[in-house]
Image (tube, rainbow, N blue to C red; front, side, top):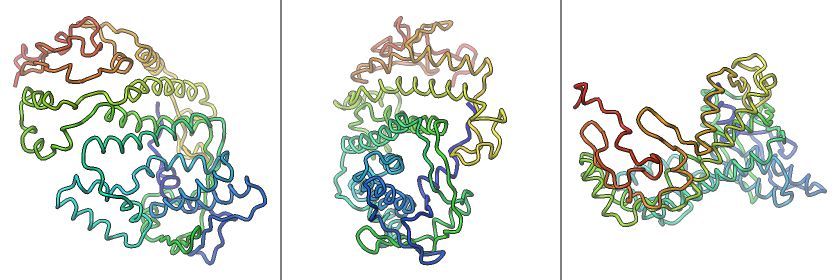
Length: 417
């Protein structure tokens, strides 16, 4: 799939610097505005849209916490408001990290604390400092870190599901027409936000001259959903098993295990009673459903190339006015079609016969291993070839129980180290 990397208009326009020119804002001059998240509109739907538009103006790296308040207030007036729904879900993973600078201090060394304090000193009396420090020093173990990651994953999941459920709904966002990195940096460094009163915020030294309206339609949401899925899958796989004895023993790991032999590392892990125990099977089983969604999305994009990639290849500005403006181009070649078909077979649980062994990739996700320690010890030679394993199927990955045949060895060719 030849899609462009996440564009600057998304990274900054949505995630960091979406400042709209709207009726909810009362401009004083070209560089200062007072944004109110109150509305006197006569209907709940109109009040919600006024507040959501005001929140859109507060979407910056320095004031997103205020924007989040606005979007949730808008949803109280109208739970169906599309703008507030989109942005509130977009911010959900980030908002789960409130207070992280304070919460994680028990796990930091003295030097790490000092470096963090120096960084925070750059943001005196700011919303971002408040957001990062608004918490208690309560993260002291791997268990508590993983519980926090659970919340972040939940945030990504809610945004992904929102995109999936609203694919047919086109949303027009108001974002700045500042799309180049150097301009973005200057805006981010100069524009300041201050809370004046409850629900009223002053934006100063900001450039309000140029605004851009960006449409987010089904094609954009299809790709955006898969981007979010990528983050969610990475965190889900990393957080599926208990990590007790790893993060909390950071010093021991750094000093002893980095240079340890494989057998020593395995012995250490085996001595940790809770390490490797499955926490949430859904984190692994959901990978298959997200994979199937991805295949469906790619096939839909492939079938709608006339609209999503009118020039037949990625060309700057060919989807002007849309989030992914340079085109969402998917090859229809035999090679790509075969790759999609292969992905479908893997996700369906098919067994693949290689020259040496049979492999069933979906097994690790369909029926997750309950305790990774059950797979240890695994003995290998100096070439990486498996000599013996506690579970010769490796959790069903090698259904014939012949894991020792899976790794090709180069030792015979005189390449051993």
